Length: 75
Image (cartoon, rainbow, N blue to C red; front, side, top):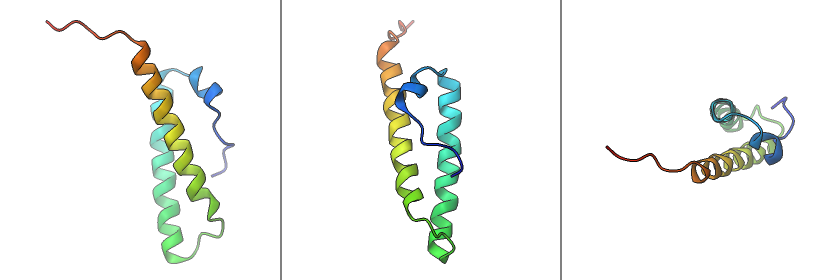
């Protein structure tokens, strides 16, 4: 994980499409790190925890965005 930790304040300023793109990249990074940890090549185990927390942070921001937008009327 070469990127800095994502701050909730910074994420709130991004469009939803960019947030979902970051979420997708985090899932890919998490998967790669998980595989590395299984075969013993991951030396920094803290990146697993950091990725998990950043994913949770993004899900929280997305949930906030969904609550802010009014529901669409059904036709």
